[in-house]
Length: 121
Image (cartoon, rainbow, N blue to C red; front, side, top):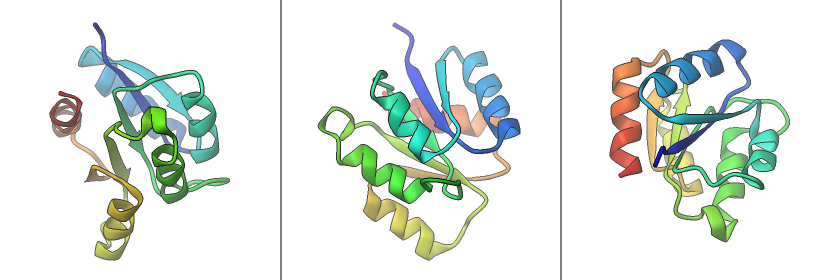
């Protein structure tokens, strides 16, 4: 059974890069353009892993993670934060919100896929 990854990022280029890296690794990829759209997509999807940016319009990554964790159906889904931010305070805030891990952009596709595999198992 193919695992589904939800990617949430307001950058089309980043979504395209994630789509390429993850679909090449055999994953089904569902995309959202920001946190608000991500929550809408989750209404009809049950992803195995979520990869989200932090800095987005409408609803940022912190709010999105809190929204995901507040829904019983998705409470246990691993969430990887993929962001240009490397600030310790932001990492801690993401962890408190419910993030599983943190990857700094620009990402290495091989390391990204390895991280997704690790948390998806």
